[in-house]
Image 1 (cartoon, helix red, strand yellow):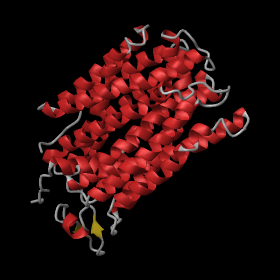
Image 2: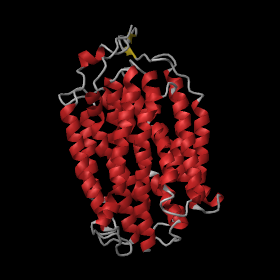
Image 3: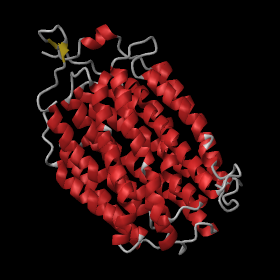
Image 4: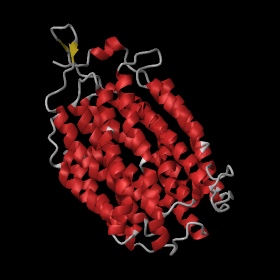
Length: 435
């Protein structure tokens, strides 16, 4: 009989995930401003999706490695925390460089290359800092509390998103310039990255000081006993049916993350066209739309925060997951019909419900399925591929798909809604066990 991990207090559950608040500020600044930054540097709208290939590609390479090596790491600083700190430190450095891509006197092509390299390192480091939080929940929290733990993580994640999304608007409001010479990123965006970097390192240090990971001897008490082969080597043993759950959840993940890749890529251009009536990326109106992206993404995060509190109240995790995705699909479908900037609050609030479920439910299913496995980090690192691969596919095919829907950025958001409906239907394929 596998020994059950003890219940943890709310404070301990909160501390495990608090650093996620800072990491998510960095991620929010990236997701809300990458299309804006590269469009400002001179990228064509049909090519914008290509700039989104690097982030998930790096995540797909880095997170399995972080999971594999952290599974085998035992040191005085912990098991997952060393990777968390290194990732956060590199992210802070790159956050100070990326928004300055157009300010070093480089030609347009040079600025693009510099921006791409900086983006590659930023997403690598964010992924390295982000994954340990999910792994620590898998390591330290029992099955009964995992939905609650991941919901707390979702809450902190979206609270950080709100802060990151509104920074450019806030700095514009206090007088920092929101326009810049052609080919340069406005100071409001640059300072958003600077302050976000400072908060990130502070939150990570807090987690390092307040979370105690289990030493090897204690951790071994909660793991499935490994069988020894005739050669004397330990044979890894996984719970029955765990990998089936992994791939079933992965199908849902594919459609969800392709949908959100479209949202991050095309929201700026879409609302600039439908609300500000412009496609000119050098215009003040386009930059105003860019600021408003931060606002509506913050509204999305508010919706996620509220819905993250509701999710644990559902008796059926499948129903909660599927319903959340359908609500988000309705939000995507409404976006192209909103011609007033304040009308956009409604669809993005609904989209936030889907986002809350995407941050909590998949990891609940997978970590419960693999409860007792000594390879939880490796499993979650591989599971990150179900997040990264659909983004890579969506980014690589974005220009072609956009041409098929009339070269319309608003239509790409309608397609994102259709993807979430498909994902919701796939939820009921997942076979779960009772905790």
